[in-house]
Length: 137
Image (cartoon, rainbow, N blue to C red; front, side, top):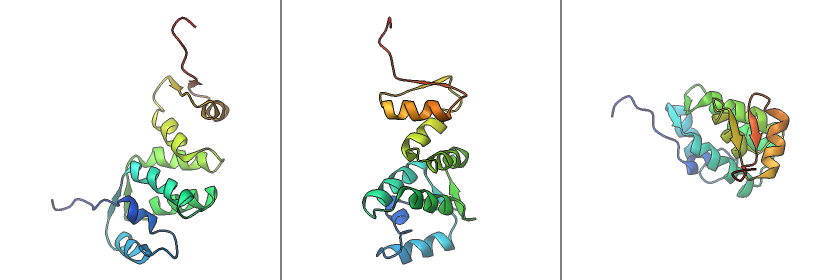
């Protein structure tokens, strides 16, 4: 289909780390074509950057921010991703931050993850963030 931007798969995202075998091909592709970057790819890429490449939290978040700021990258849900990246710079887990930012129009957000609830309550004043409750509680 003419006019559609190629998608960036997670292995291509992993190439943003210097020294990786895929870096040259990934950078060349990203720099020469308009690319569509799905939010799910960013979620996977953040995990790959931390686990496989052992990038510290801040460096990984900065790398993702730089990637979505490229003029030829079209990021799915960019305002949500930018909000999540901003929260993540405050040491908030990126995946949790994406989920919380994506639920922005909701009245509330529930999670069984107590750490997420505690962190979210401290930064999200516009919605109720809590653990799910049993009926009748």
